[in-house]
Structures are given as C-alpha cells and as structure tokens.
Length: 86
Image (tube, rainbow, N blue to C red; front, side, top):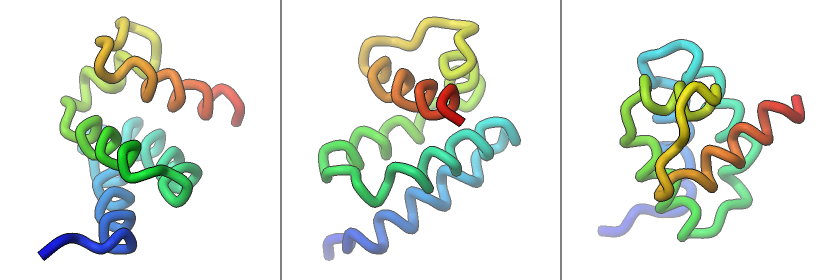
C-alpha cells in the first residue's frame, strides 16, 4: 500500500521536530512548516533522505561549521536561506 501525500507530509513534519538535538528540532520543524506543503514528490523524496542524516552533521552543515556534501548541498542552502530570512 502506498502512503498518501497527507500522511507523508505529517510523517515528515513529525520527523522534522523529533530529531534529538533541540536546535535541529527547531530549525527543521520551522523549515517543514514553511516548505513541505509546496514540495514536489521528488523534493519530498530528497527531504526524506535528508532526515536520515546524522543530526550532528546536519547542524554543522546548516550552521556553516562544515561544508555540506554535494548530495545535500542545495537543500542545506535552502534551509540556511530560510533561517537567514527570519
């Protein structure tokens, strides 16, 4: 059985806010609230994969302490751009 879009959005939103590192909970839940509804299926696939990354790595990439690898660089740039706009 395939997951409905509504269920998928709820699942990704929940995974965004239940990370393990409070900073990433805040950053990713804000990002999810702002972006999930308008993401294409391919973008949702990519975000789902991003959520599988280690929180320590994600935080370093988002905060600019380390360069994000090519496979997530565009998403990290989008997250950083959203943070900067707030």
